[in-house]
Image 1 (cartoon, rainbow, N blue to C red):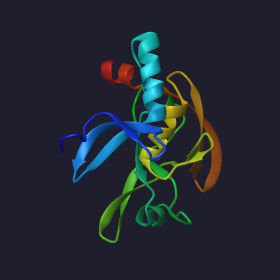
Image 2 (cartoon, rainbow, N blue to C red):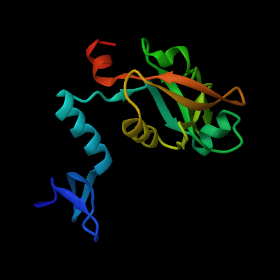
Image 3 (tube, rainbow, N blue to C red):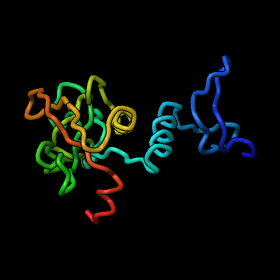
Length: 170
């Protein structure tokens, strides 16, 4: 709707919460957090570019169906469904290697379950991405707590540049 695309999103105390990047109609708008805007804008001003951190994995929420199919006590975390070739995570994380039917739907089985990144518990791919965008950079290693074969363990995953990875044709 007119007036809903672009500009700051502020609270009643006039604090900037984010920058509106799209209008959803009916006076609803979506914004990028102020913390992310500050991080990206500062990098662009300083270096002329911003490299997004990239793990290179496919993830799905661990729903009750996914939990049952993978013999998990309860739904939590993110199931790794695939790991891209050529990313450091390929040497650390395991993707799903099969599927099974639960209540008539095919669900992935056999991959690692990401429970947390850093100190942040993650239950959606968006939560993981948000954490990485605000707290990590390409070339850094981040601690992931995963569930593998029924046991929790912590692994170190090196991040790459999303732009560099995609432009290399991988």
